[in-house]
Each structure stands twice: as C-alpha cells, then as structure tokens.
Length: 96
Length: 152
Image (cartoon, rainbow over all chains, first blue to last red; front, top):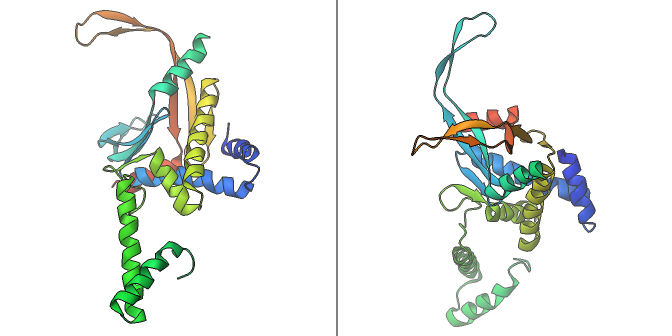
C-alpha cells in the first residue's frame, strides 16, 4: 500500500469529504509525527507502535571500496518499534 | 467578535451592566475570559493549551487528533476516528504481509526471521528462538534529514 492508496481507501469510506481533505488529513498526521521527532520527542501510538529518536555516536567508518578510513559524525536517526498488537498480528500471519 | 464566541456574549452584557466600563475595556475583559475558559477546559481534558505537545514530549493518538482539529478543522470525534482508521488500515496491510510505503516519511515492511539460537541472559541457558515475522521501518531520506538537523 502506498500513500495514494491509503488516501483512496479513506476517500471511499468518507463520501461526504473531498479527496483533497483526506489528503490534508493524511499529510497532517505524518507531518505532526515528523515535527515531534524533529524536536526530539517520542510518538506513541498504542497498538501500532512508537517512533523515537536514537542517537548514534561518531565513529570511524571505512569506504568499502577503497578501504580508507572516514570520520562519520554523530547523528540522530528516527526509530520505530512495533507495538504489541501489531507485532502479534503480523507474526500470526506467518503461522496461519 | 462574530458568533464564534456566542455563548460569551452573556458574560459581556452582565459585566457591562454591573460595572459600566467602557466598550474597549469590556472587549479586553471578554478576551481574557475566553482564554481563561479555554485553558481551564483543556486542563480538564488533560491537554496543554499550547497545542499537541503534552505529557513531557510524547505525542499520542490524542495529540494527533488534536492537530487535525486545529489544522484541518475537523470535529474532535472525526479527528480521532481518522487517526485510528489510518493506523488500522496500515496495520491490516502489514498483517497481510504487505508493505506500507509513505513517500517522504518512510516504509514499513514485514520481514521473516529464521530460527536462531538465543540465550536467556539471566540463566545463560541456550534456547531456540522460533522463526517469526516482524515489522521493520525504513525511514525516508527526508525524515532522516529532518530528524538529524532538528536534533543537532
């Protein structure tokens, strides 16, 4: 499923709203999540999962092609951990 | 003032009669009243008057719904229904073993893990970790860049 398919599904379920309204709703949701992570916060969506920011220490990496050392600066990366309910549902899909 | 604060007109009138202030002053009193009222209502509902950030800096479904109220102008009920439905649709897709790709945000994939030997960290004994299916999130370059530059 891609974003446009998600929007199409929601539009179908909400005939009283225009597609552009649904687009704004979906965009707002992910923009808010991004903004929260940008400011160093966490986003907890019960049943689905949690987004957080993880900090990576600076390290000396290697260019795999030439083998030379390069300094990799410290950075912050977005991280997602699936919630219990989602984890169980996804795992159950393999066993069925 | 318009009819947005219709229910507060009564307050204005009472104040006008009782204290006989000038019109300009009344406007100030009225505004202060509304702000105070909103603050109180929000506090009762466990929200911050400043927006979606609450309970430290953890954003929840309620906070997301609140942002739809203020940014898209949906009702509280519709907003929280939409937030729930979006994540429900995404979960349904993943539960069917399919991916969810959201451009400029990231992609959720399911990945099958083989059986491996693990160790109980407490007792040290070896236990087999069954093969399982997990959700992995790969953030888009846009999200990575924004998160990194925001947390420098």
